[in-house]
Image (tube, rainbow, N blue to C red; front, top):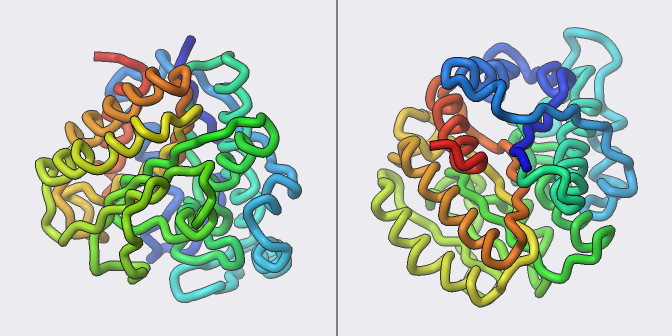
Length: 310
C-alpha cells in the first residue's frame, strides 16, 4: 500500500493578503521540494472533496461555522478579518471545506485499507480553531474533525493526536478535553502564542511546554520520556498528526531549533506506535511552517518517513 497526498487547488486560493505568512506559496514550496527530492511520482495523489457540514458540526458549533460561511466576502480583493491574524477572502470558506474534506477522505481511505497512510497538504491550517471560534490562521480544526469522524462514523474506540507545531494546539486540546477516547501528545514553545496555560499531564494529555531555543535533542528526550510511555499505555487504534514545521531553526515565526532530521525521527517513532497498535493507520495534516524552504524540506523528510523511503 502507498502513502497518499490529499490536496485541492482551492486550498491555494485562500489568501489573507500579501503580508500574511500563511500564504498560498506554502503549498507551492512543498510541491517544489517534492519534485527536487524526486518523490512526486512515488506518492499517490488524491483530490480532497468538500467536507459535508454534519462532519464539521461534530466538532464545531453552528455559530463557529456561520462565522466563516456568512462572513466570506463575495468579491475578489475584499477581506473580512475574524481577528487580527485570521482573515477571510472570497475563497476562504471553500478552501476550509476542502481542507477538512481532505482529512475526512484520508481517514476513510486509511481505515478502508486502500492506502497505508496519508498527508493532507492543505490550508487553512486547523489546530487553533476552537469548537466555538476560528482563530490563529485557522478556520476549522481539520485534525479534530477527522478524529471525531474516526470515532463516531467508523466506531474506533481510541485515537491519538500528535502535534509537533511550535504553537500549542489549543483548539484541539479544547475539543477533546476530558474525552477518554482521545490522547493528545504535543510539545510547544512556551510562553508563546496562543498563551494558554500548560495543562497537567494525564493519561490522555501529554502536552509538554518547552522554552524558546529548544533543540532536537531536548525534543527527542521529552518524546521518549513522556509521549512514548503514554502512547504505549493508551494503545491507539489510529493516529492523527498535526504536522506543523514552524519549530524549524530557520522559521522566524517560532523560536525553536529543530531541523529536518528531527521531523523524520519524530515521524518514525509515531509510525512505530501505529504499527504496534493501529495497523499502521496515520493521517497527517499540515499546520504551520512559514519559512518556505524549511517548510518544503521538512515536509519531504516527514513524507519520506511516512512512505518508508530511505
